[in-house]
Length: 149
Image 1 (cartoon, one colour):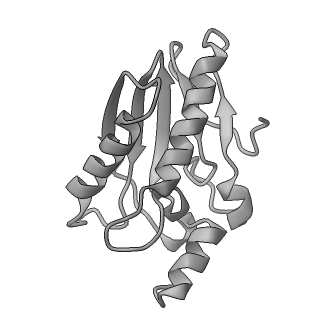
Image 2 (tube, helix red, strand yellow; image 1 turned 45 degrees about the vertical axis):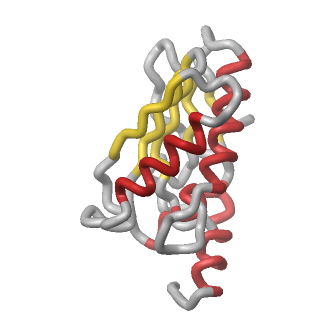
C-alpha cells in the first residue's frame, strides 16, 4: 500500500503498521485517517506485513468496554510492530485516568494471541493525549448512534 502520511521509521528488524491518525496529523479528514498504511522493512518478509495487516483487522474488532466502538475507530491504536510473529501494540486511552486500561490491554492481548502466526504479544502504553479528532468517520458515526459525540 502507499502511505498517505509519512510514518515513523520502524526499527531495522521490524515491520510497522501505522494508522495515519496515529502519525499525529489531525489535519486530514476522518476517511484518510482511517486508511491503513503498511510500511514493511526491506528485510522483513511479506509474512510480517500480512500478519501486521491481519492484527490491525483484529484490533478493529476489539471494543472499548465503555463505548461500542473498536479501538482502531476510536484512534487508540498508536503503534503496531510485527517481527517474526512477535507483535507489539502501542495504545493510548480516551483518558489517562481511564478505569478500563487493564481490561483493554487484556482484550487486546487475548485477541491478538489467538491469531495464527502470532508467537508473542506485548501491549505498551503510549501516553499521548486523545481527542475526538482521533476518531475515524466510522467511529464518530458509531458514537453518534449512542449520543456520545
